[in-house]
Amino acid sequence: RAKKKGRSGTAFFNGEMNQFQLERLQLENYLRHALEKNEMMLYYQPQYCLKESSISGFEALIRWNHPVLGIISPRDFIPLAEEMGIISDIGRFVMLEACKQLKIWHEEGNQRLSVSVNVSGRQLQSLDFIFEVKEILESTGIDPTFLHLELTETIMIENVQHSLNIMKELKALGIKLSIDDFGTGYSALSYIKDLPIDILKIDQTFIQNLLNDGYNKTDIAIVKAIITMCQVLMVDVVAEGVETAEQMALLKQFGCQHIQGYYISKPVDREAARKLLQKR
Ligand code: C2E
Ligand code: MG
Ligand code: MG
Ligand code: MG
Image (cartoon, rainbow, N blue to C red; front, side, top):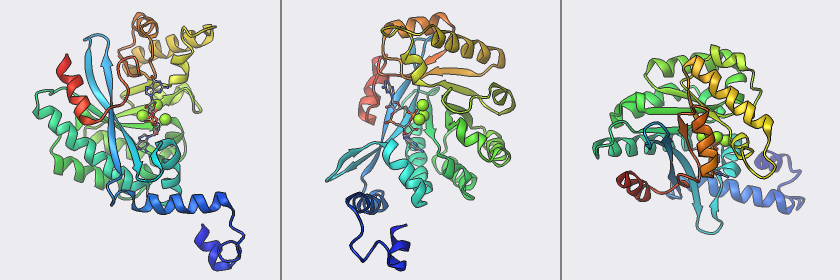
């Protein structure tokens, strides 16, 4: 955008660019080269099965470690990458790395482990998306049932028909689909039964309101209702952001199958992930 403004002469050359615009331009510049400079890496956060008392999979979470700026949160740079039109490059990197890592875990004897990858809206809509997913499945040779793609409600509801077609193609490849941050979007419950969804992740805001100081009866009822609904629809549930033993116990009592959160482990690098797997 700054370039366009530059050409029309309004912001770029006449000294009108403010500190904020400069910083943003600098950040865009850094981000454009982050992949080639190997500044991006994946962390992995365990997803824990309450029934089997063991790790059932990991969610891959991207980290950008810039030599000057330090660690930058995906919440800050993913939206920027979307605007810049480079989200597909980053998304492809994440999926490839996650699938390579899954292959290693499977070869090390954890044959039932899954890996979850976050997919952004622009990435899902890109024309090459399905082609790239197929390519990654072929080149890594993983079993697609153990690849879970996390989409948010907002993504699915914008451009419904197109998203639904892509979701069906992904399902046809054998991949599992999951709704991320459930409860924070439009949350029309009717969508859940119409979408080809295998897993629903209850957003951490609901979980954090369980049993915290001055805990919220409404949130308890909502969480319980979501879990019951998923049981009826035969959709797996993952509760996100579980930080205490009390939250875990309550979720277990409600029949929740899987939890993810700092109580089990923070996101860790792959060496630490291997140690978590060996511990069980
Ligand atoms: P998300 O997919 O909902 O991921 C969960 C976020 O919650 C992660 O933040 C994780 O570190 C954090 N978290 C996990 N357990 C707890 C807990 O017990 N307490 C608290 N307070 N937080 C917890 P992170 O890694 O900073 O990622 C933020 C968001 O950025 C993700 O939310 C996801 O939407 C996005 N993101 C991360 N990696 C990628 C990626 O590779 N591609 C895309 N498109 N988006 C990504
Ligand atoms: Mg996620
Ligand atoms: Mg989430
Ligand atoms: Mg999120």
